Length: 402
Image (cartoon, rainbow, N blue to C red):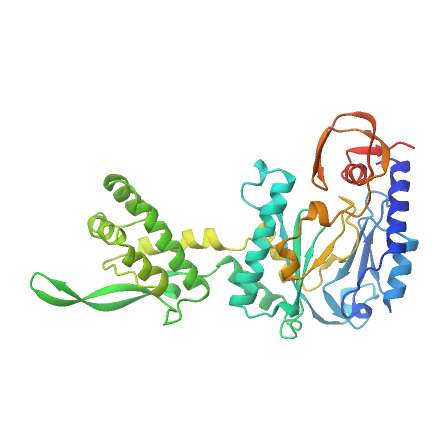
């Protein structure tokens, strides 16, 4: 990025911060602040250990020294401006989750808009299934934020999590990842009476723990859903292929015929999904272990690979300021409610700047989707809508041409 490009971006960012109100986080005066500027020399990664006493002070700073990136601490400190973490006197921290589209499976074959749509599905799943349903956080105790780049953040401010230290936060991460789950946690042997040629007898069968009249809960419910779905897929295959598939999951060949007959009964699959009842007997440890592994792989929340593990467990982390500009895209870091998230389109709703033509030198061919239009730009000098031009400049694909 050359000097005239940096100067242009600084001026446009300055105008944004002078005209717009950036909503400060709760406990503003007890947070550490950090900034990255366009004019920083290589090796100066971030200017941090800043503190502000009011939203007005913060606004004045942003307008007078417009940063490329603005951050505040997840933590609350007694002395946030102190130069060392020990001197800051840590008092607690929000619980932060960071989902980045770059870490999602299959991302290499996705366009930018497809990546954003995919990570939006994941943030909705994280919030609805894990944070609200499983962990019991209230929507009013969390803020959802589009990062301005390739993902979303969730700030949980439930008073119960603020004092948690890193080990306790790591346990929450482990839950989202399914770390530590094994067949003894999930499955239990039970007995059932079955009808045979010689009358009734009792036999051992497997059940999934945690099911009652209201159905399953948490990972137990996910295991039941996965097993029912997978067995339904296997049951739809021809006999030979289905039996081979069952054996690949570790089922003893002596049991494949009986199991295949069962899983072709919709009532059996319904019993697994709704009651956690497998109705299978025998030595199934390997089979169940493989089914559990498949469940974890499908449903886990991959932190900094669907949720960022270091961010969640790090009690001294800095996170992007909602309402600020992301200097790598020129998009707004957008705070959202759960309801707003449903229809949020970052490539329209996070666009700050207008359509006035700006002359740029494109240095790298690129495709950009902004405000519902796809721009395919080639190397050379030309005029583009300001929002597209700034996106390319922030991405290092164009330079400003006065």
